[in-house]
Each structure stands twice: as C-alpha cells, then as structure tokens.
Image 1: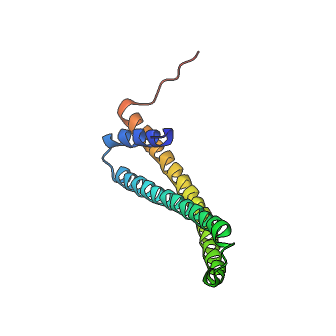
Image 2 (image 1 turned 60 degrees about the vertical axis):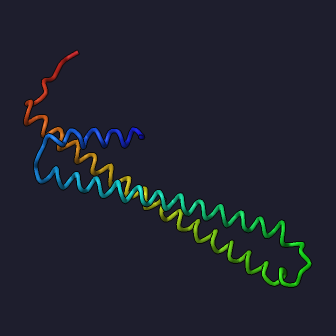
Length: 136
C-alpha cells in the first residue's frame, strides 16, 4: 500500500466519527474515484502488454518468416506485419489516453482528499475546540 493510499484510508477512518450527509457523499465519491482509477491503471497495463505482444509479433515475423521461400508465407507475411503494427500503434495510443485519464482521476482523488481533510478538521474542532497556539 502506497503512502497516498494510507493517507486516504486514515482520513476516511477519521471521518467515521461523523455521521453527516456530507461525509457519506464524500466517502461514496472517494470510493468511486478509487475504483475508477484502479480500473484505468489496469487498462494501462493491459495496453502495455498488448503493445509488447505486437512488438514481439513484428520481431517474430521479421526474423522467422522473412526468409521463408514458400509462396503462402510471402503472401501472408505483409498482412501479419500490418496486423501487428496496427495492434501495437492502437494499444500504444490507448495506453497514453488511459494514462492521461488516470492522472485526471488522481487529481480528482487529491481534491476529494482535501475536502476530507477540511471535514476532518471541522469535526475535530467541533469536538475538541480550536487548537491552542504554542510559541517556541
């Protein structure tokens, strides 16, 4: 678990002492954004895997099928290379788009965490009063 996730869990745990509608809405929003962010990063990894698979396919056809004298292989090899290139370029574009979307979700989660801090501070001040300033 990363520091980011630990801090979010701590803030959510602090808010369990509040039973307001705002806390419930904030908790649902955080849960939704975390779920969406995890889903997007899984998609990024899947696209990275497909890009690697496409590169391996292009390398395979370049090394093993290029020198084959069979007429059927000569007809199919350009098609196979085009398919692997299209798969690689498409998955690379999708990977970049998903990574950008993941960053948008991370920014939204940071905004939700700031709101969570504000609500937790308000809760603590209502229960404990304003903090006293100490001079050092």
